[in-house]
Length: 86
Image 1 (tube, one colour):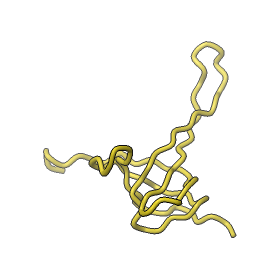
Image 2 (tube, helix red, strand yellow):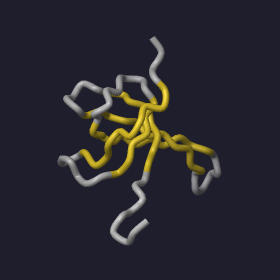
Image 3 (spheres, rainbow, N blue to C red):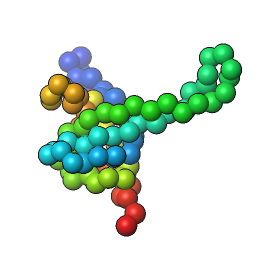
Image 4 (cartoon, one colour):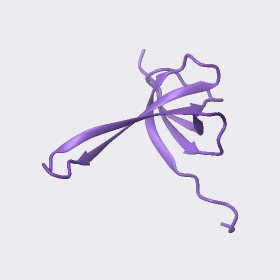
């Protein structure tokens, strides 16, 4: 890998909306330990991603960081890991 190429950070999440043109909303869920109580709690983040593949609601997709494509869109869909049932 050369100096000017970076490894793009990839995340995996579930598509919760595909109502926009070429954009999907992906819900990233993670489990973290509460700093005081020590209990495992679920945290989530919604990200907008460029979708040229055609992901539907409920699909689990892998997204990667990229240059800013719009005000809120900084990721692109790399692959569809699993399709939604039905």
